[in-house]
Length: 243
Image (cartoon, rainbow, N blue to C red; front, side, top):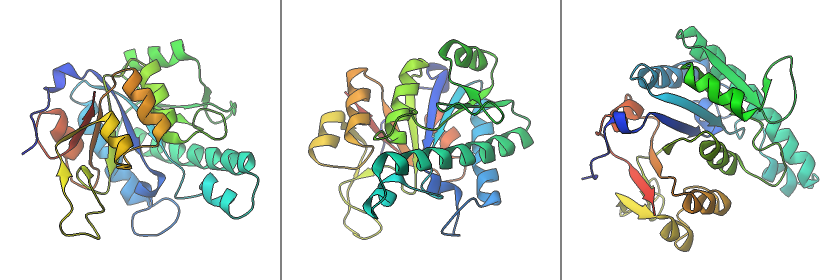
């Protein structure tokens, strides 16, 4: 049984990190509007608890820089294309959240003023104080950095108390539970164990940045209805990555 999570009152500001693949449902590519709407409803349920929420969404459902690089494309160009994919996902999620009645701002690390705000830390903090949901897009604005690293960076800059990483499984396992029936789930694990055992929670740069700033990472299943809200209320199944 998982250790009990602190009640929602302790977590007044969190960052939700999800992959681009989480938005494509069973399609295999692109955005699946019902899936995007379901995730937006999950975010609304936590927002209704009074929790301030930032989001970072990957771009792998549209284009992944590493894959482009592996196929012979110059790495920096491929990574910039991946950043643009995250903008598309962020705009799709913004539309879904605003359909739920939540004021949302997309903030891009790459200037594109017609569709998103530029990243200005103080302005972003003010949006959170006004109970708006922020979606950080375009990663860090630099090639060679993943959206995992961007999520950890922004969570620290915004003073978030935890990163919630929504995945396809209900925590961190010692091996792929979809392929191995004897896979063991961790209730909690340290940053160093994640790095040493190559547990694949986030890339090494993101884990090191979280460790250096003592920022906990909560890994949970985004496919579990009510899972995000339930964990903030001290229930549910998850893995806590900590110091």
